[in-house]
Image 1 (cartoon, rainbow, N blue to C red):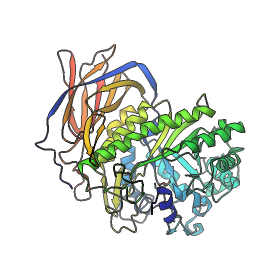
Image 2: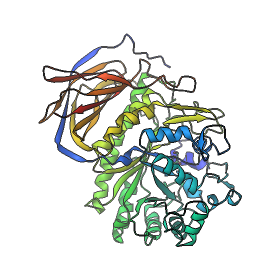
Image 3: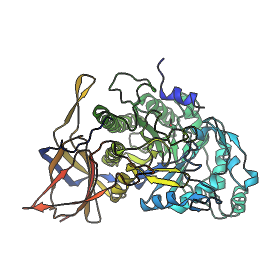
Length: 535
Ligand code: AHR
């Protein structure tokens, strides 16, 4: 029987391809950066994160407890805090995911004795030790802004108002402020981003778009703002479901309530590596570590669909919101492989998976897509930060490691807050065998931004074995040199684990201008960031 992600979530209540020796050159590629054709400012929030009460994400991932021997700040794992500070993490979404629509925030505030263990969405018991005040302290420690997801399926609009009151009302002004003060934080947290439900078409209530529009209006008709405008995010579509987008926005427009939503969420996981053989949620997934060259290309090709999704949903949004008041919040994205590479024990670290060089390329190409749509995408959150699907970190007890995904995030940092500019890539496409037929994938892709007198150019070379040499031109300006970093390996399956924490790491690369031309060689299977002063 065919299963899909929705069904899965309901139920959830080597090939050795060493490239050494196979390298060859494909000269003739061309990259042209057009600084006079700005796309928009790159919202730092597209470098956002997501943590959910699921498997080992919160407990043992972020939270180790104040009594732990593992270095921590008031119970929060120091390694995670330090790593997030180093990449200037802009925003973190919490508490879910599907968990959000089964969560009562009131069970997780106050003194330890007031915390109430509850059955959670994923079939375990949520101890409620990590709640609103711990999450907001985590944000304070890392410098990230909080993005809270409200329970629309199970709690009413009034409980939502009270949560906002707890977080944002001025010191001493309300019962919420008193409770917050009693927990040691008299001053308001000023939480600006609020998600109104999660996947409301599925685990968040199985609503139709019209039903959800009614709930969205109920939740947002009045919210306490305490003098600061909130950004309320409507629960949006999954993947290609433009019908949800169209009908939801249509229903909001009918009651003249488009203005209530600052964002529409979009969720897209890259999971189907079957090459079109099946759409079955279980059968279609591939292995995180043990994959063929075909699956390498298929993941990158499926990941590239993000570009089409953004364009398609944006076009449909314009039907009801022609001035694009509502922006896209891609608040769950990343690779989702089949079970098999979890941290042990699997039952504890549910949905954890290994992340390889392939996932660093997926990260790079996805961030590049967001940047090419800087006018449309206001936030994005990789799912999820630690011990989960597209994770930047893995932790088990006192062991901790940064994945290749983390390194790609770090390399792309100079784009944050810069001005995305149109950039043209011309390179021969990659061709590969897809279930007996020929398939092709772009040969080089990336994005460029301008800020502080510099151009940052990020480029993914998806070819498993061939380097690509490209001339890079700045239209109307001169490139005089610069510096660069590359993330690659001769093994497509290279990954960092607790025994080999540094197997994949960025290396510096020279940026050479000779005879007035900047020509750069992008190695096979690589993510490159070039930081170029503008002449
Ligand atoms: O990230 C894992 C799950 O995927 C989330 O809980 C849910 O929102 C999505 O379907």
